Each structure stands twice: as structure tokens, then as C-alpha cells.
Length: 568
Ligand code: ATP
Ligand code: MG
Image (cartoon, rainbow, N blue to C red; front, side, top):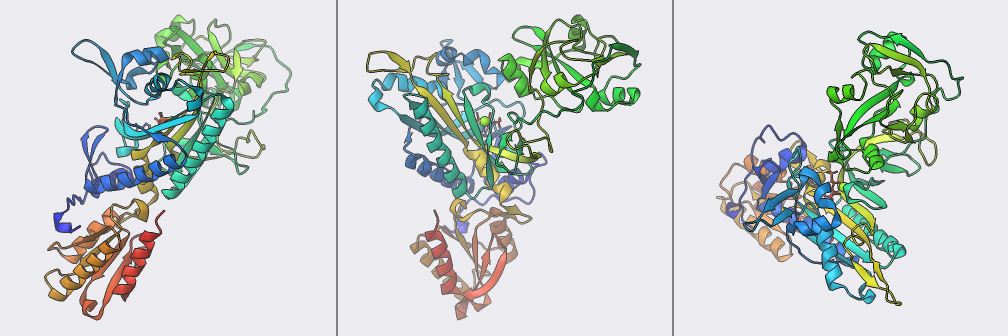
């Protein structure tokens, strides 16, 4: 491709709203342009890379025996009612009504559609197991679309769904996909970790997330050298047995004027946050009742564990207002589980703590020596976030924390969709049994951003060769110089003949200007044709390392050709 014929939309600066490297570089390199918040146009260079990422994913899905289909983003309400998610999904679901008052949504995911497809098309158990997938556009009205392609309102996902005869079959399908995901992210050059995950609104019995490791990741990964790794939402840790074997002392009410926060009360009573029961009041929008959650004062509440215990969705819970706390018979800042008659969830550590400090449900008062069982009751479970240096639930050694970007997630769905939607097969004795399902997603556009997060420097993007928009660029220092022009064109033609995706920079611009563009865009090999062109010598620059060497032109052609041949 001749540079003069390309749409090279590089920019010196990205708009202020672009905060992370991948967002800034995607815009500056002219790969994407914002249309509205969370919705982007993909320009030619960006689309080439996106297509290459999709190609890797397609190959691995096909190798794993999955069959590609393509369904619509438009989904009828009826199917979502059948699965029970029309109510449950909340405001992220983009809903609309057609001219006949029929309701639809733009698919944020496709469980309902694929389940419906298989229940109508697959009649015999001979067709099972079956795994089908698509690479298609999804819509989610994210509360805060941000970070460019990382969290869009429109994004591209590869979603696959497996249908098996039984749990054993599902285990096999799940393992096959797990392996395919490993292959995809390895081939894309990502430094990633697989973690145990919560199953969230999609539901089901088991799940893993594939996390690209990055400082800007929005997920906390809790991991241990023994191999245990989980998303913070799911992570477990051993109970810290702090003050668990003291004699239970008598309840004492004390005046604590204006001491509301854990820090204030700890300082006032000369105790540590660990000695205090942190009591937070939520409001369950489904039952329209307050819910009290108790963790030790040094801990934070894991809201996913809370909503899972209540069997509700994330948008169905919120913090209670001061009025609601008052109506419950308490006072904001001085809430305690003692004497309240509301649903109470108690973290294991809080339940074991002897003689803790709690609010008195009255302003400016606290109670000392509060003990679970004797003074209050509730549902005891793990409701805390695991933290750095907590002990590993598998081996007991200290856990560590790291940030990751969720690029993919796989779920064992079981019969969560096949049962309510009657996606069944007939057994030999004529019984209709629901198929056992799995679902498997990769955020394709998010993966593109994640690669940039891991492959960039102060000059721009350093694309791995297999996903770079082009493999190489030939840059004559001065295209008006006859020798340089001829030599550059010659290299360009030879590389093209060798199946290298190559650009000839025939623009009438200063060399520095041209180099900046290619370094920003991240073309892996830059062949500079300059003064020594006549002697058969060029300057050969490798983008990953920014290493520059003067080598023979033939040698440069050979290096690039061989590297391209080896792309997997
Ligand atoms: P998150 O927790 O980041 O909101 P999710 O768990 O809701 O993501 P899934 O339903 O598991 O997402 O979707 C499969 C994949 O699609 C995710 O692993 C992620 O890579 C990608 N993805 C999800 N939401 C977005 C989005 N708003 N923009 C871009 N990619 C997304
Ligand atoms: Mg997910």
C-alpha cells in the first residue's frame, strides 16, 4: 500500500478524556474515532488489527470444533421473559419498541438466542454435543463508558455456547474452551492469568476469567504462589482468628459523642478498627427492606457476595438512606446489628470476634462487648473482600493482589437457560431432558486495547507482528531522489511478492515526520532508504526494541520475509 493513498489519521495529541495509554494511542494512531460516548468508528488501520485478532480467535474456535454462526443484535423481549432476565438485567439492557408496540433489546450477550436456536434446530441427541459461536457486536448501556475500547456501550464480543447431554459432557466442553482461550491469548502475545470467577447475572455453577495483567486493570486479582488465583469478587481467604477465644463480657453502653466512623470510634475508645463491628445498611429493592451487613472494622464489604446471598442482581441493591435507617429503628453512623429485626448478614470473622464494639442504634452511643450468638444473629458467611497478606484458602500462605483487565470469561451454565426455555433432547426411553450448557466470551475490542496496554512506549504502539496493521514500511528519506525512489520501490515490490504486508511511504514529507507516524502506529519493521541506497545498504529499525542497524537491503528483506512466514 502506498502511504499517499492511505487514510493516515495520526494526531499529536489525544483529547483530554483519553486517560489510559491504549485509549490515547488508539486515537493518536488514527485507529479509532469516537462517535458518541462508548461508541467508536474503526478506521482502516484499526480495522486491520481488529480483523487479525478476530482471525486468531476464529482459528482457535474452529480448531476446538465450534461452529460459527451470525445472529442479530436485535433480540425480541419474549425470549428474555422466558429466561427470566427481562426483569433481572436492569438499565444496562438497551430496550426499544417498534412501530407495532413490540418490545426488543439490543443484545448485551446471546444466551437466550442461542438456546432458542438450538431448541428448534436440534431434535436428536445424536447432534450433541454442539458448540456454536459468533463474533458480533454487543450493546450495554454502561453507567460509565470509559477508557476507549475497554468499556464501550457498543463492543465486539466472541461468544460461544456449548450444549451437552450431561454434566460430564459440559466438563469436557468447558476444558476444550479453556484450552482454546489459552491458545488465543498466548498467540496474541498477552501476559495473562486465569482466575476463578463469580458467575454474576449470567448464573451457573463454575467460571474462570482470563485477565490481561495491567496496572490500569479494573479487576483485582487475588493470587498465591501455590497457583490459587481468583477475581476479587469471588476470592476466598482463611478466617483471621483475631480475639476469638476471650470470655464473653457484659454489654456496656458508652457515650461516644460525634464518633461515627470506624477511625473516630477506634480513637475515642482506644481500640483498633479490628475490635469494631462495621455495620452497613443496604436497601433490597426487590423485598423493599433494609439489609444489615456486618464485617470487622478493618475489612471492606464484598457486595457481590452480599447480592449472591440475597439472590438478587447488582442493580437491585443500594445503600440505605438516612431516613430508611431511621425508619428501621437506628441512627446513621451508630448502626449495630444488636436488637434490629431485619435481614442481617454477618461475615465469619465478625461472628467470631469476642467483645466487639458496635453502634447502639442511637446517636452518639456505642455498645462494648458485643458477641455474635448471644447479642445478635444472622446469616454467617464470607462477606469480606480478600486482601493482600490474607491467608490462601488452599495452602495457607499469604495472598497477593494484582490488577487485571478481564479479556474473557467462561461459564458452566448447567441448565440455567435450557430448563426454563425447554431446550431439551429425548433420552432413549423417551424422556425430555434439558441440555447442559456452557457459555464462553471474549471481549475482542477490549483485547485490542489490552494488547496496546502491554505493548507500547513513549513513541507509540509496539504491535506484535501477527496483529500489526501492516508488517513493514519502506521509508525513502527523499522520494524525489531518483535512486532512493527506485530502490525503495524495488524493496516494496519484493516484499509484496513475498506476502509481506508492506507500506511504501511515498509522501512528500520530512523523514522525521514520517518516522514519527510509523512509530506511533507501531509498524514492526521500518526499512529506511537513504544515502547509501545506491550501495545496497538500508537502515533497518525494529519497532519493539527501537534498535537501528545499517544492513544490506537483501538481508532486511530476508529478515522481514522470514519473520512473516513464521507468524502463527
Ligand atoms: P465487566 O465485568 O468488565 O463489566 P462482564 O463480566 O460484564 O465485564 P461478560 O458478560 O463476561 O462481561 O462479557 C464477556 C467479555 O466481554 C468480557 O470478558 C469482556 O472482555 C468483554 N466486555 C464486557 N463488557 C464490555 C464493555 N462494556 N466493553 C468492552 N468489552 C466488554
Ligand atoms: Mg465477565
